[in-house]
Length: 388
Ligand SMILES: Cc1ncc(COP(=O)(O)O)c(C=O)c1O
Image (cartoon, rainbow, N blue to C red; front, side, top):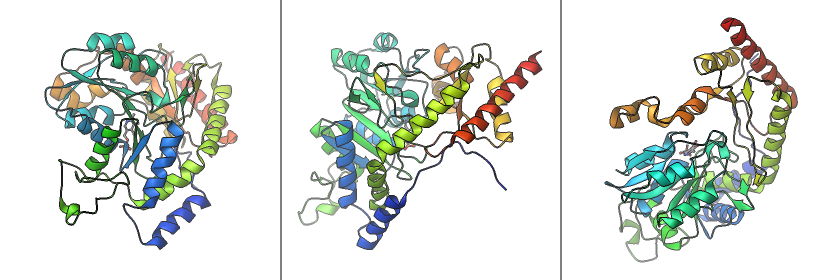
């Protein structure tokens, strides 16, 4: 019998099944009322005037960059400590990612370094709420305003988190959420752009829909032939009605899901604190945390292969684990295209070498948390022994 504890697992209830069936029975599988309902729910929750559903978090970032007209010759200041998509979209836009190092605690970009990296060619700051942490977003928003450039907030990992009462996704000119199955809520694949900027929202609606002129409902206007008239170079980044039905159900359950995830995070913290080889995640007092993953770091004594051996050991014991995140600038295409190498962003690199994600999802039980913690402790002790 398989006893593996996976790294993540979606939480699907009867409500999701019911709403998906409703869409199937309606016969309207794309561009319909479920997408609009999902958009309204997210906008209301985050506190923005507009929300535009798209087919993934990556697609959301792409339509924002395109909507802001960012392209060749432009620089976008961003973080090397993230999932690779946050930088790939800059490269795909034809612009240049300018990396700056992160703060050792929050693992988000250090605002001082961001300011130092701004040049006359900087067209945006693309900030990521790494592992769901909103630290420095308010400072980065002020910095962007001072330099009259937009802050693009990659909130793919931060749905439901608030900082001083303000929702992640609402700090920048536009924010993006991702709904891959490991996220706080899932639509299978999917994403959502949120913004107060009506022109940008309209541009994103058009860009997701092949560059069609769109009304606020996301459908083509009523003019004869309008469906095959295109105003700009767009994409097909539409979210299906089926995916939106999942989204509506998951948004309805968001508070319940956040609460369960908080419970799991607290159980991990209680169980793992006191292990001196581990650095546990911390939440600053002004933040209400909607946990995305549970990532621990080995202490700075362990900068070699130890972390990878611990991950392998956990997996051998059927406990899911992964390295979160290998730095973007050290990934092959970035090394090859831009000549990045080790040592350029030491804080991000050190975190990237020592961090590992543990199984984390709403239904993870305390017994499983205990088993994961025991196995992790065992793997760490094994490292100590093999070091002598
Ligand atoms: C920080 C960050 N940005 C962007 C993305 C891309 O989202 P998606 O996988 O929905 O395209 C992710 C998803 O994992 C992410 O974590």
